[in-house]
View (spheres, rainbow, N blue to C red):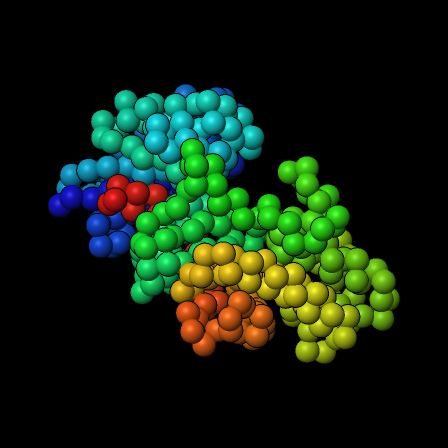
Length: 311
């Protein structure tokens, strides 16, 4: 049996998944990233993880795909810069190929997750899709005609850093008003905290303090508390703005939402779809764009990385 290994590198753990070309998971496990000891030590950890996974499967490992944070030169498998991993111009693909003895392909981690959802998850019935991840920041990936789009030198699709509020809040990238400053889970938590501090009578105080509130808090109380509802409306307004910009540029058939906020399901997607239908260029009757939750959860990155080997 021929199978593929997908690796999703995070700041703390590397998730590994072995799967068939059809997307059937054969084995999953994880290891410490170990990046504090440098890129070569990280590759040693990954090699040990690969050996552990292969020991569980009878078959032939035919390729390895990697989703890695940061700016990736995917044509050569080089991590040009990954601040959270402490890597710069690191030949990740070559180093792993030496250790694993099979071809290795590397892309950005958000791109890998988008490919995973497109091939095996919420986007599998569509040729054109976009994944938007709502976490600490806003990331994502773009699939055009069934293929991953990475932009020039594999440095594109940084969708969290398009400006949606001119002269808005300062972003970590150095610009003001970026999408992720208004639509990340961090932004939602920050605005919830501010709203609670402005309204001492909010029902949210009955369960949370301004230091313990999360991205779930306002959604939890939106049906019983005016301030919570205002927070949710504020968040959805800005998120819809960014999604419609993406829809107008790429006109995908579906935009999939991942990350912790997406767990709100229809409480999030229904109002977003309503705004999308109303405001998208030309209306949403022709070339309709759907807004749906992603479906693969934490497996999307590793599965998408493995799918790199299938192209």
